[in-house]
Length: 197
Image 1 (cartoon, rainbow, N blue to C red):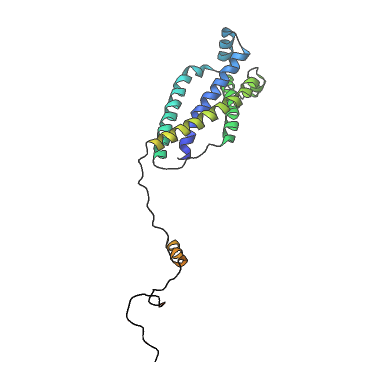
Image 2: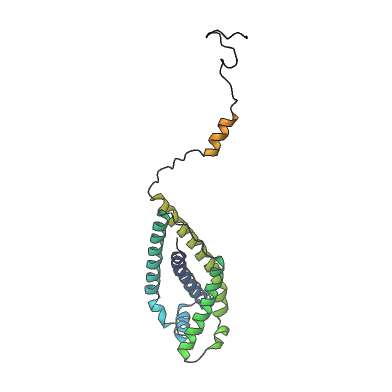
């Protein structure tokens, strides 16, 4: 399986996990809905209304990648593993960049004070558990696609191989050499033996 297909399955899962951790951090810090909505609007989260569309497109890409992974497995192409370090590194990095971009675009200047926001530390801390869940889900989905592809793979005829020539000569050499009964003068019937003259 091509590594790009594995990444096209993993990245939508990472995106969904990162956004779930992001939403959970805001729910945790602002338990009341009206306060949470006010905080989201005042920090540049207006784009969240388009998030279902983005997640839907990402899910479609992941589904297509899983289908292509199954086709690769049916053709006998080997599976490529996803690096665990990427799942540990990418979600926290994406979260930090997302928070900085949200607030910087909202205020019009670089908003370095984003790291002091009450939702920043909990959101960053929640990235790793959701990244672990995305890693496990990606591995299970890719393994299921591979198993499905192998199940639908055409059966290959068994290969019959002739025994190697070395083994055949070894068996012949191992047999004891026996002469014929006539050459050992042990035959009971036959012409008379010549007399010694």
